[in-house]
Image (tube, rainbow, N blue to C red; front, side, top):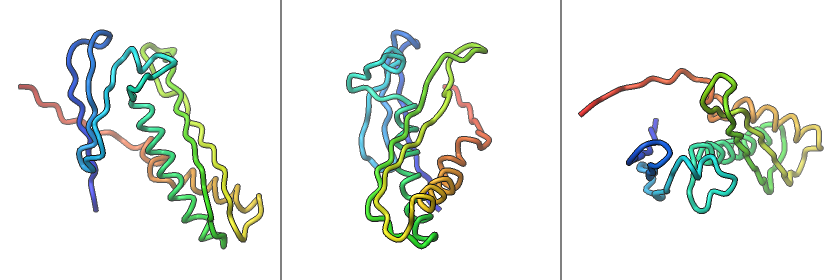
Length: 144
């Protein structure tokens, strides 16, 4: 099975530093990241880990929902999914992802509103990115 990867090169400290995250396995692009832009209301062309999680979750959920709608007897014509990832101060210190809101609008033949909602709930639980947010994380540390 495929493994996907990204790489970040960071220079400087947290508040005065900056970096670039590269989508290495796809080669789709390299994007600027910085702490001040991460915590600001306006990103001004700089992405963040939370935006990347939102992109991953929205695309994964769309694929899973398309599958689950078909399994329920529907034919998806179009789906528009938005994922909003909230990034807030952690009451225990530091920062945290405090929630994710998925919103979906769809045009589906063969299912009523209840069938669409049931398939969406199933997709929310079955989406691999939804599942990934609860898995153990391993860490390999190397120092030059």
